[in-house]
Length: 395
Image (cartoon, rainbow, N blue to C red; front, side):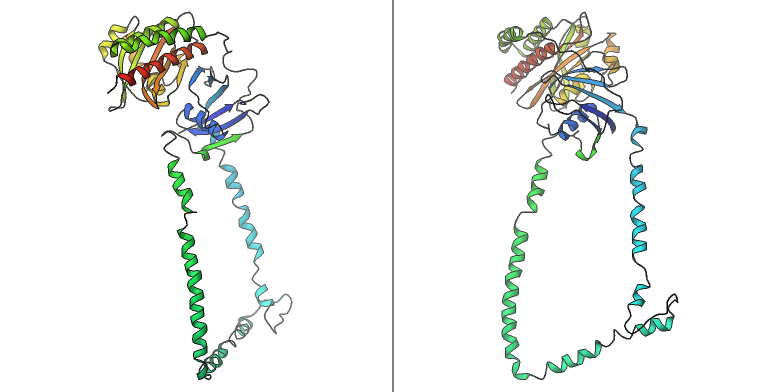
């Protein structure tokens, strides 16, 4: 498990920025843990622009809120000195009780004995101090004698005994009734109900640590400047045209949606992967581009969580990667087999009703390697329509 530094900008104007250190499996899990620590566990991060910088930091732009998160994986050496302060503070309380319990004070308080100042007590004096606690022992015989002397008083102790029994029964009942109440058990039953909500890669809040400042100072705005492109006309056109896919067969309908995405987003190629829930992987269903025939002949299957497509399917987020060479999630085996240079990827999951039906991706944007936030929104909309389409035709 790696350690990440997560910079969280203020959610509202006038708020405070926050920098955290998080132990997580990947940067997405670290980001979600940071938002949870900030009290934004309800915040939905779904459409993201990802830029990997020269210092290997990841700038994640949320197209919905406009916030830009900075995530950087820290070296193990930077996190090693953290436990050292604990080792220094541990011995301090050990020296205090040693001085607080001097042994001679027991001898100074012995009744009828005054020790000469500065002289250590002898074993005889220690033995002389022991007899005083023995006098309480002869007090036991008078108690035994007092018990048989009042024979007529036997019925009298029986009555209080009955009353005592009644009194003890009531508190006993009360004591047994209190544990029956599910007050302590309520949190226990509430805790198991919470874990199903987070994913398997969720981070324990105890692994999130707030720091005073980032490891590297942040000067000026980070991430990309937000585009002002209006996409209302594009989305309205897509809304009308995507309805035509619902009257087509499975492969034709998915290919139709992929063609729409490539029409609105200038890219060299694209593909659609459909989830195989039984095998927990993704199967290639449609492809466009110069290497589409070769890609179809491979009958490609991608495990969930592997590559950009598998990552988007697992996390249910849309990602725009401007430089695949800098992204460790990029699965370059397919590109090597096809002899195709993959430079940038925009991928969106097909999600509906909490289920991920697959992913749709466009590869190598024309003219530049950077996808815009409007293009992320366009592909996310097409992918959502693809999920509804697959949900309709699935048995």
